[in-house]
Every structure is written in C-alpha cells, then in structure tokens.
Image: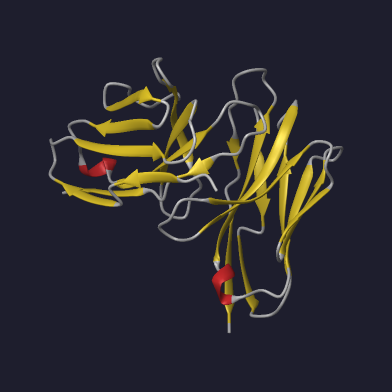
Length: 114
Length: 116
C-alpha cells in the first residue's frame, strides 16, 4: 500500500529561524513529489514539484530535496516569517501510465511565533 | 498561474436538503478533477476522481448516490451532497489537473459545509 509519512506532526519555531520538514514515502514506481502549503480554511497551494531525476528545487525561501533511492524528501524553510504558519503537505504521485492517483501525507503543522 | 475557483466557500443547510459545490478551472482545461474531504487536523481524503465526459471513480467507502459528481466540461465539475446529514459537515476541496503525469494539481479554496 502506498504511504506517505511526514514528520514532525507539528512544529513551533521563532520568527527568523530555519526549519526542515521531512517526508518518507513508499510509493513505487514513482513519478513526482510535490510540497504544498495549506493555510487554515484554504485549499493547498503548490510550493515545489520534483521528478525522480531531480534532487533539489527551490521556490524563494522554500527548498525541497529529494532522494529517490531512500524515498525521502525534505522541505527547508529559511528565515521563517509569521506568514509561513500553515500546514505543509507532501504529495507523491505514482507512475501508472495514463491514470494518476496521488498519495497525500498527513501534513506538518508549522507555527511561527514572534 | 492556473486558478481553480470553488464555490461556495461556506454553506449552511438543513438536514435532508441537497447542496451543490462547484469547481471551475479558470484558465486551463482540466482533464481530471478530484474531490476531497478534510476533517479537522487531518490531511485530505480523496473521495472521487472525475474525468471529463465519463463517470466518476469513487474511493472505497464513499457512497456515489450520496455524493453525486458531474464533470460536464473541461472547466467545470460539481459535487452534490444529497440528503445531507450533520455528519456530512466537513471541509470539501476540489483539485484539477491537465493531462500528463507531471502536471501539477491545482486546488480550490475549499467549501465549509455545515449541516444543521
């Protein structure tokens, strides 16, 4: 069964600090992995997308890494801001020819405090 | 960037009534749309997948007669919660994508349904 596990479940950091969120998956064969940010009461917004051949992808202060061999990904947030407070969801897509069914991680709830 | 508009954002209805939620892709053609349900402090739970012009594929445990999905065009999918009950109260989110394995999912902003 395809699974995506994220850690930590929740995290509180001071404004301006860096943090790293983890995502481990068992989806195979693997097509791509995406990180999303979901503000409370809103739909998820895409941060990064990586295929199996990519090791890192940046989007401003967000940098995602991927190790397809160990099936691990991380999302690093630098110089955190209060607006970074949200849930971060790792989403993994299998390769299945024409039909694609993603697996969602349970998310990491990040709270940035002043 | 690609925008998915979901409407309404909030709806309150009485038990036994039906509620329709719309999901529109505003600037791209969505070959596939997904509907999710999200409980507090939990991640999204896929309810069904719909491809334009064909019947939706429902996940195990999701009643297709209760959650009616129509994907009539490449830019519109609707979810109708029929004979709503208080336990149907939840946050419903749609997403849309174009063809291709690496095309990203674009999410709507969700609909908060409260059944009284």
